Image (cartoon, rainbow, N blue to C red; front, side, top):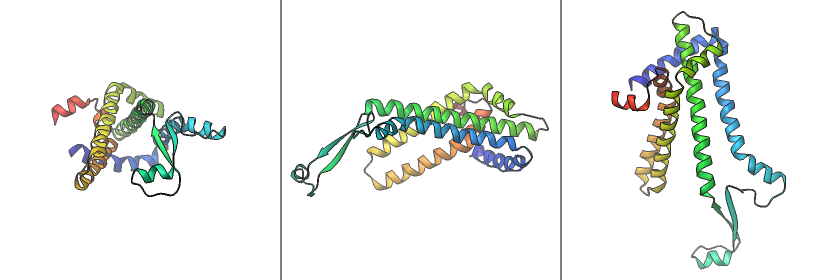
Length: 206
């Protein structure tokens, strides 16, 4: 909780510093661009299939099969029309999805660390450039790497448990936990990573 409070104070100070050092917005823009490029890369096979007029647009991520209305009625579902059933290729989807999530998380935390490290140096009365800010984050790359891995793992575990839970209250509580974790990743994790603290050190300290 102290780290989140500290991060919030740092965020407010950063807003004041931003007006005098506009290069800081570059970290935010670069983070957004990296996220967009990752999403575009993930969806590019679908776009290629669509441009070629391929009926199986979802390949290689899923197989689309036709389920006749009669077969659905036989299974207890009332329908007079044919339906399409999507069968994800989990062997492909899961590794690529996890890789995209991990790389995206790494870039977001890394650039937030660069942003906060630059702001901290400016507040201490020192000059810093965009490139030097990236260098400061690079010095903490091991901590950033570990936090990205830890963050993705926790997020996947929360989603896995939530997808298996039938209890309405339990799903809502896990949803709140997921929001809380995303808030911590956005606010507190970059501050901790900027100090060079790994997840295991943070857990021991906690």
